[in-house]
Image (cartoon, rainbow, N blue to C red):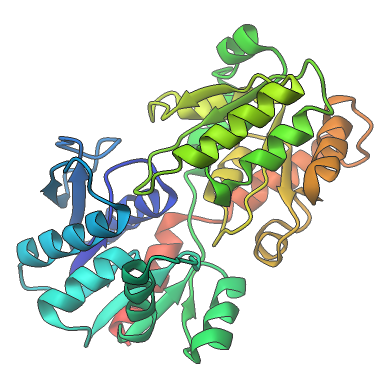
Length: 361
């Protein structure tokens, strides 16, 4: 098959990781794959090398001073719509922005769209784009049953459910090779959060939890996004200062360094308020790192039996302390084995074959 996958960014966000891994798995299975993406800030490639068997088409998006988020999104849609070309058997958008672009360029008939999670926008333009990308595409895919249930309840549609894969072996190898040691030597026994500082990632609550764990370092990695979260970041830093918490904000971490950073963590904290699957958390399990995550239906679905669930700053502090102090009865080799096995069971080749079966049907 000739397959086009579209993603809104070249940065290391979950949906972009998903797009590239799926494209490479399609190519391994013998299909012709093209990945289309919007490239901001002068980017000339993705955050990591992409298999040469995958054709990559980047659409440059120049920065416009004073442009609002809504204006930037609409301009991005228009740029991708005007650039998108080629003859494909399958066109599959991985987010609402690229779904709108393809819809504008070719119409929504035959378009596939993956719903990783459901957003809530207050800007009229963004709310309209979000709605169109749920209602108009011919077929929807969700990465968890919980999100599919939200789509069924809210829009009366019946998405297919295909879970994410994970590069489990890559993170397991990093742990086995001691790639986390330099990070531990520098920061000690640290708590790690990946995804940057933004409301959906629950950063403020995590900072308040760390105030109950004095002397424990908090590292925050990642953060590239379309949206301007500076007011929220300001709130987080102000609250941290008032509580005496000094988070180490690493920003985007080089892809080659990420497995070591994850493997070196004493605890992986995942306080997200909204997720579709939790890919970064699954990578932590692959590295054998204890996971403390928010008690959401989707995360219960994905991580039951392999994670510790918490709500609110007090709950997160309690569960993290249980790991650090060794008082958690689940902290035994067998429990870590469960997490590694869960991660290893989610392969990108299996996810690709499930997609291909849907496409053939």
